[in-house]
Length: 174
Image (cartoon, rainbow, N blue to C red; front, side):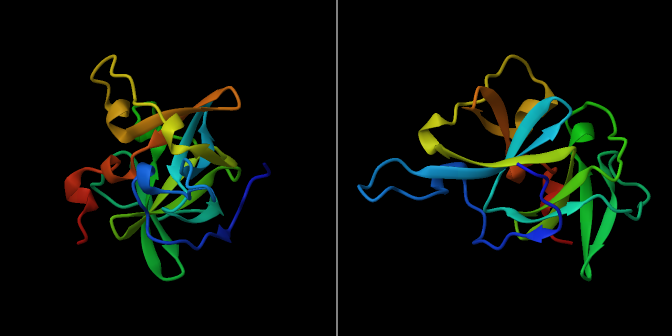
């Protein structure tokens, strides 16, 4: 899929993975949809119902005394949106942003947050039953941010748990 830039996605409020999607006419298995994107060679997905907009990278204002993964804020049509560097949040170092990077604006508990990614890949639909639990091989920080894993077109896509991406004190409206 070609990179989607500055296109707004209007949708209902975000839901849990198991509640997203539609049943077929015969009342069959629910379909789950998510936006897949890349960070390096890894693929991730976020609930399509949480995505509000996908933008090309633009300059942001840096704020002092923020966690390292909060790169700054973006003025999005008058709304100040914090920008989270997912690569850094997952313990893989800071993203060296270029004009080719994207920002996925998502709704997390009533608040807009931007997520830095390398590129958008696709809109993926899968049966909700295909989403596997995240294997717990250790206590790595990345596992806490994932809600499941799905295999699609022979590629593993890690699904981001937006509700746990930010610490509780950062999720509350200020």
